Image 1 (cartoon, rainbow, N blue to C red):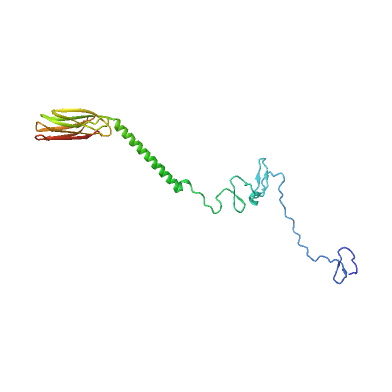
Image 2: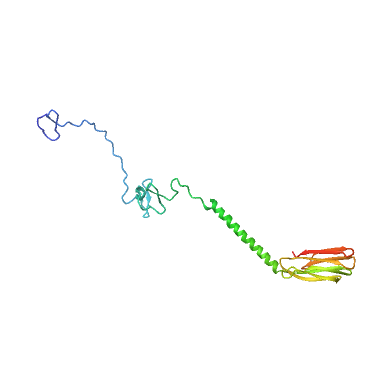
Length: 237
């Protein structure tokens, strides 16, 4: 204790006196041997030194480097870190994927409107096909010629009436008092391809009619009695 400082470390108390510095009372910690620290070679190593080490193209191994998110992703920069990244309302960039709370889009084949379009397209295609087939059939019927042979057999004479479709026009013709047997050939065409024949005996008691189209018999009938009447009708199809 002194009225004045006697050297470095002396301190003045509240009584105005100076006191010598006191040695530290903190006990020394037990001596701990230093732990070995592995220092990554600055220029790499010939062998891997632990997990995460990677081998470069020069054949040497290098220590792993800490990975940090791109600054633009962390700080909400104006430029995306990579193509396809999208910016959310919080200002940050996120990798390509559906944004939070947004459902992924359905494939086309799972959407109702896609199948409606398919049905409409098939319907239109079907109508066009039907019209095309019908037009072809009508054109074929109009341009196809048929050889029709009318025949009436019996004894005596008969009054005969027969259809004479020619070039698509309907019509009829008569041959009254025709001697039997009687035959008539007609070349018919058109969409009306039904042919008919009728005959009434004027003399004799039996009369028959026959129609053949393109060599095929399509009708045959017989009637008996005085003034017997017989009728035949057939189609080219």
